[in-house]
Amino acid sequence: MIIAVLGLGEAGGLISAGLVAAGAEVRGYDPRVDPPPGVRRCGSDAEACEGAELVLSLNSAADAPQALAEGLPGCAPGTLWADLNTAAPAEKLALAEAAADRVRVVDVAMMSPVPGHGLRTPMTASGPAAGDYAAMMRPLGAEVDVLDGPVGAAATHKLLRSVFYKGLAAAVLEATAAARTAGLSEWLRGNITAELIRADAATLQRLLTGSKTHAVRRIHEMEAAERLLGDLGVPARVTRASRDWLADLAGDPDA
Image (cartoon, rainbow, N blue to C red; front, top):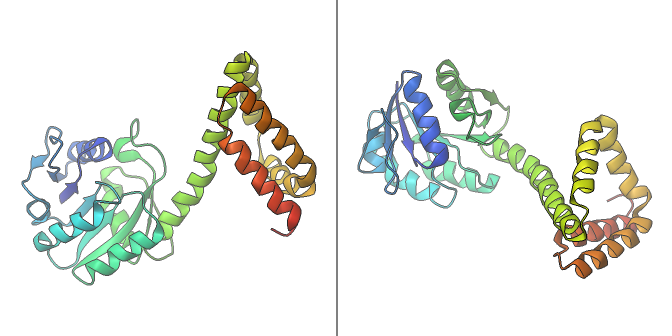
């Protein structure tokens, strides 16, 4: 199987190396990065796409439309074009519309960091050709979960998870920065660790129902927390956002 990889940065380099190790013929193009061993260097997106059954776009959401426009002349009709960039669902859909009937666009979301996983990074795919993408990639060692949805559905799943997980990380960063300034870093890190270990399905339900039930009291709590962070010289970005969410809930308990 011939696979084109457009974008050979961290993710593209690791995945293309994994494809080579699995026995695929890989052609790569990236004007800024040298290909890993075994990947044939090409001089353009179109050259990399010539003869490829599958194209993996791994540049960036901003560069994806240009990569498609420049790669299309090298693609045979029906080529699978998998967009693995992190982008909004509307951007994925616009890419599929720009491709028209010249290639079959698959929306692919990588659901964990690529370093440490490479080709085995869990992926979610959506769109009419998602099943064909999975059929090509799974024998090479990829983990692909196919969603019953249009192009953009995989991106929706990934970004909803990002709101939670990256938001949680931001809250931890803000709290530990303040704790470090207050001389309580070790205590807070232990407290956070213990809470994460104890978390289960009931924890989620308490977060949802408790925030609504105790919204008014918690507004005052977060206002006090904001003042504390101000005294410590730590930006209270997440703390203010939490206060604002609680204020919305207090004004509309059905929110």
